[in-house]
Amino acid sequence: ENNVGVANLALAEEFIQGMSSPPPIEIYSISAEGIASMIYRLKVLSPCTQLGFCHGVVCHMVSIHTDGLMVLYDLPTGKLSMCHGSPTTSCFSVSADRTLAIATESDCFRIFRVPSIDSG
Picture (tube, rainbow, N blue to C red):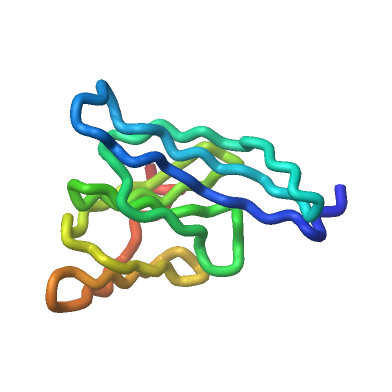
């Protein structure tokens, strides 16, 4: 299949007090013609504050959560790795090889190793 002109978009609805569980992350494939289809739906343990795809790929995605949890997803395999940062994370990025991450937290930034998806 020719994927030229296809983009992926990750969304999570806002968590509203009183909801029984946090809304899932939904990932859509959007064609150049504007046709969107949901390709992944990910259950989360706590509300998301940030979502992003890893540098240069759409098969790996990172979510940051209100409790400081950071989750790295390997979407095609369904595997993931988790680590905890700070609930005050305001910006993050993961290296192209998915081994290091950088996050801004409060008045500083932190560089740390990302747990390997294959180690779990």
